[in-house]
Image (cartoon, rainbow, N blue to C red):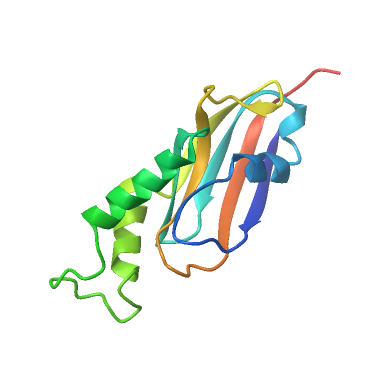
Length: 143
């Protein structure tokens, strides 16, 4: 079985946001799979996807604080500045964290660790809505 879905994510503030449940809710065929994979591709260059802590929001805060320290928008050697001071740091964040994930599916659910969740890294102050292309494949649960 193969399915592909485009998932539309509402605009979010700059930072890291837990989106696991939004992904699971959008994947119509997920519940019917015994075993499989879902590949997620974020269709943007100034946001990212990563798999990390799902319980303590301080981890998402601290990750954003570290990234802002690592790639602030006021570095004098940035040449790509015409889209605003947050754009080049957004591209850096997208490259560091990546824009795709491949996750296992087991018994109709994403097979994640107890403390794992999928994060959207929004690296722009006003990045707008974001699109994910989700490709789901696997063996259906036998009826």
